[in-house]
Length: 380
Image (cartoon, rainbow, N blue to C red; front, side, top):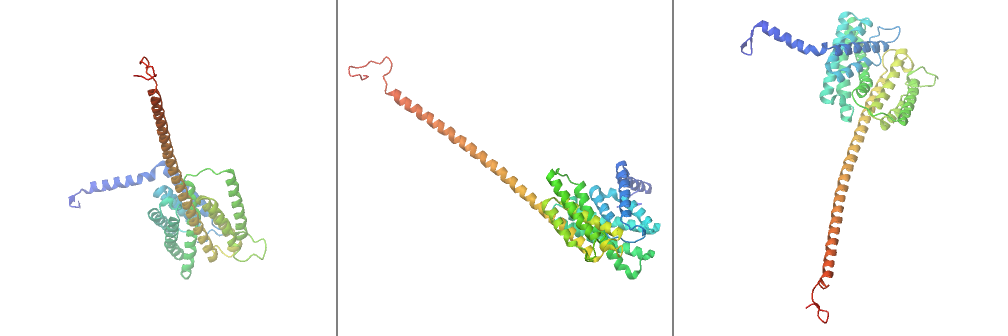
């Protein structure tokens, strides 16, 4: 065998290929990464099962697919070493939903491709795990990490559903839209919170801030129960009072950091999943996500994260300006102190020289000791 003009024995070539494969596979086989992958697969599976309606485990699509957010957060935080856990979790979940081994493998491969594409685009164009610190990066995360990969993966997922008979080809675009929106919302709702919580350092909150956060969560939860839970009264409109969530999201954005804002969107998304699982409120007619609700959740989550990042960016710029002002002020005050000390030293020096000159002149008018004195008192 020749390779680039040099003769290479086939045995040496395959030995080199084997060594390269083992070297690249090494990080995946480390004990710590194996344990994390096992935990990730379990969490992925459990969260996916919770998101399925009781009594209807074979429903092909759900309102909000939170495992997609878990998978993307894991890969952003730990790299591609987390892909085996995602693959195993998706495979077991597909088997649980009644898919064949072949279709489950196809779903798992599609999920891996979606997460790989999303993580690559976010790391390259949206500043990776720092994507939620600037408004520009948040918008790129929404488009490149959420919308584009979800749309492409939904094509494969909806196609497999139609092939296996879980859906008709005439319903392909309906399945595609629900699949795409479910993955998108899972990424927008869960990934930012996990990345901000696990990938950044945080300052401890004061007691007053903790009480305010508790009030925010309690108020938002009551509004979400009114929207996504069982209807306590009949006069509530079909789409609920979703706009009542907006003041609480604005509260989280203006008063706290991006982590708290992402937590507020997670609370809202969690209640939406709860309503979807139990068929409450606006989800009472099916497992899919109503278009108006999906648009509201997507726009609300993206807007909250974007404004929170812009607010954090502005606060950071303000702190930088104030810090620079304090540094310059200290430097100027130091220069003024040095100048004042210099002037004071010169004043003291001039006063001393003036005093010496005056004393010398005064002493110059007195007779020297032992000098003869004339009859008129003058020194000859």
